[in-house]
Image (cartoon, rainbow, N blue to C red; front, side, top):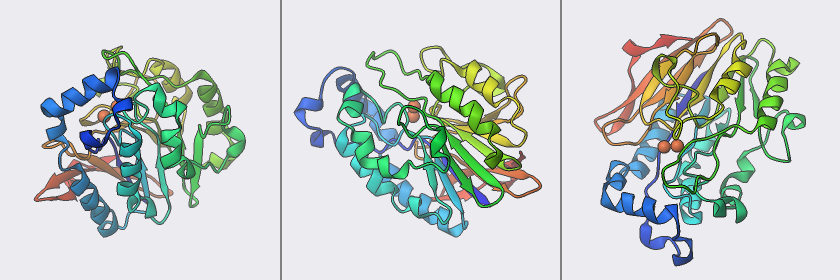
Length: 297
Ligand SMILES: [Fe+2]
Ligand SMILES: [Fe+2]
């Protein structure tokens, strides 16, 4: 089975389309940053998503996963546009599994006014609905074919303070994740555990406190004994793979699929015996594999 993992596409907002009432707090600062430069890094994101779907079809990818940050400011218009842009990738034969990034739930209005749910709620169904907590979609489980399972937990939340972009997986989700990973339905499968925030960076080093996953140690200890699988994440805009001490599954960060000059992703090939992860790169206006840099998983 072939699985595509991408992240952090940060589709650029049309700033003039954001209603006046939605401009307050951190969104003003974020909008100014986009206007002053950061927006240029993602200016071609829409075209790259079209190319990404072409790459998905050429490679005969079975399942697509995304670890969030579709938007920049989490406005209703951005989320609606993101859904439209992502729709072709959601047609992968064995499905599409994703989590929100912190930019997709930028401020509390996104949750209060249910903008994320409005655009993506219908995509967040689970094959183990008895395991979700508090009426939320998480942990979301997909049993894919005979050999693979995907388990998604949500670590993103509004961060109204401008200097903070950290995340946390709520404790009830971690408690439920313990049960999910021990469920008979997952036995013998290769399991992808995915969330937006990276539980560590290269060489297993913790991310910075104001940027990282606050309860990374708790999350990693829940995943520590997973016999076959990997942890997928995004949030950090560079691709890497890492191992955390005492944790069996390796960690794969997809970086950003669309950031100019740093475009990256992973393609996993998994069968009953083992798996391989191959980096994807952007060259000559197209995504392609870099087989020389593949790693066994
Ligand atoms: Fe991001
Ligand atoms: Fe992020």
